[in-house]
Every structure is written in structure tokens, then in C-alpha cells.
Length: 142
Image (cartoon, rainbow, N blue to C red; front, side):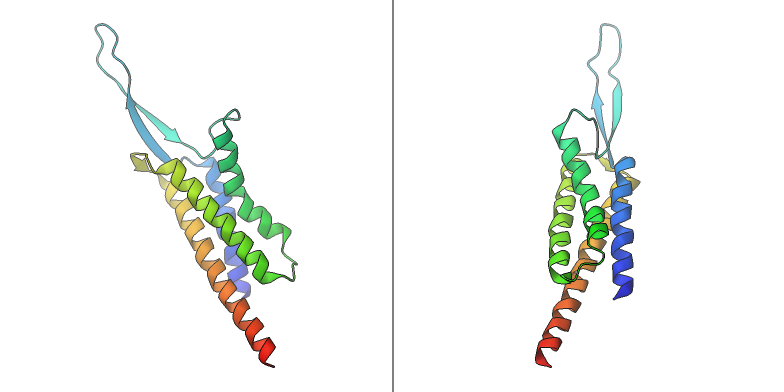
């Protein structure tokens, strides 16, 4: 059980680190001026683009919140409630990642790392919740 907790912290930390990595890349064409050819512009999509956009702040909150909640609830006695809360937050993070990378042309290393860490966090939480429910059920039988 201790290894699941450590892996949860590692994957939530990796998810938070993906804020600083480009997640995907899109290309667009610039309008040609008189006598010039059309140029292809490649832009990289980050989870946090600018401080003036609300979506950037929501993406920041979605990717940081699993790590913050796990750190704040280290010594909590309500393991099942914390696991379910982190599961819901991780699903929100997955939605945020899909929102950033769905329409892109190419997913970069940061996007793959973010997807891997988010999905592994969800799977680890499901394992931990199953173990906690099993322990609660065995404790009630005794």
C-alpha cells in the first residue's frame, strides 16, 4: 500500500511538471502579402498560455490540484473520501488535457507525459480505493 501512495505522489508531481512543457503543436498559414508566398506558422500549445485567459488559469488549477490535495491530505484518516476526491480531480485534469490537445496536429512529449501521469494516477487511485474498501469490509466482518 505504501508503494501506491508513493507512485500517486510521483505521478501527480509529473502532472504538475507538465505545466512547463509544450503539450502539442498546431500549424496555421499566414495570409500572403503582395508578392510573397504563404508561410506556415507552427505554434506550441502549453497548458498555461497567458495570465489574461481564464482557460489558462483553469488548466493551471486542474494540473496542480491533484498534487496539492495529496500533499494536504497526507495524514488524513478518511482514505476513501480522499481517494474519491482525488479521482474526481484527476478526471478534471484529464478533461483539461483533452481540451488543450484534442484539436492539435501533433502531441509532443509533454502531452504524452501528461496523459501517462494522469491515467496512471487514476488507475492507482482506483487500486487504492479498492484496497481501502476491502480493508473496511474485512474490519466490519471481525
